[in-house]
Length: 283
Image (cartoon, rainbow, N blue to C red; front, side, top):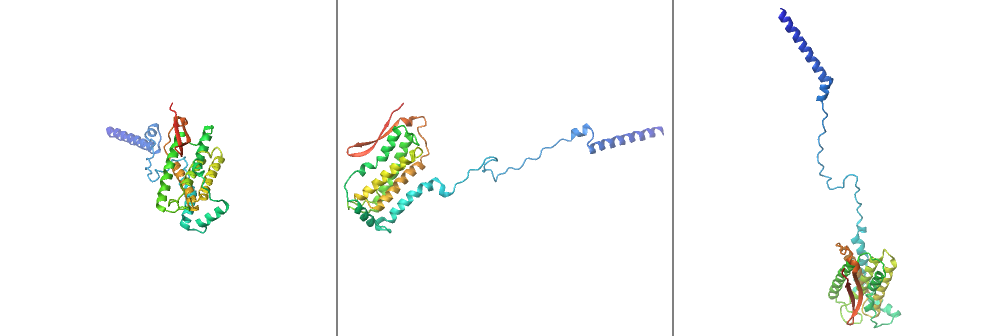
């Protein structure tokens, strides 16, 4: 009987101890229980693949300009208007025909055989060269400027002569059928557009002077009965368009090591034909 009483007492102590442990675990009491309950990190969020091409947080997205403010559109407006009017009045069309313009201009200016327009077409280049040699820095260094000149001249010559041979419009004096568009006017406005682009940050008067010369070339071609008004307007458009295309497509920048400032360009006259002379002084 005494043995049984001891077993019952031991079992009661075990039950009491077990109850205390369970109570401590349930209530979180005791350092052992607190050590076992560890904070768990939240599960990682799923990757967002729907916005992966957007700018990261805190970086503002560049505002997209309307189409009419884009470079290509802005560069095409003036050439499109000039070429469009030239095409509209081509071959006697339009509300103010080529014959009307030819008659009115000769009421004020008599016909002339002067060849001054053959040299004035390069006058804007002379202006640009003189200003650069005087110490005024152009928008591009000389190497890149020469590359733009070569590219724009190639575009202008290819486009104007292709249209000339395709249109087959007779000149006012009947000398040939290569009247539309005016190559002289295209050359003059091409040079004027380059002068304006390179020096407009310094002063707008450089461009105004160059465009005034180019306008005079177009007027002289009409006074000499070498071109109709449609030829002159279209030629101006082709010249400006060629310069704009050359600038828009000029992505590679050469001469970053200063070589560009050792390259010179100047007008030349050799064998009865005007042209350009390129000089380079290597370091």
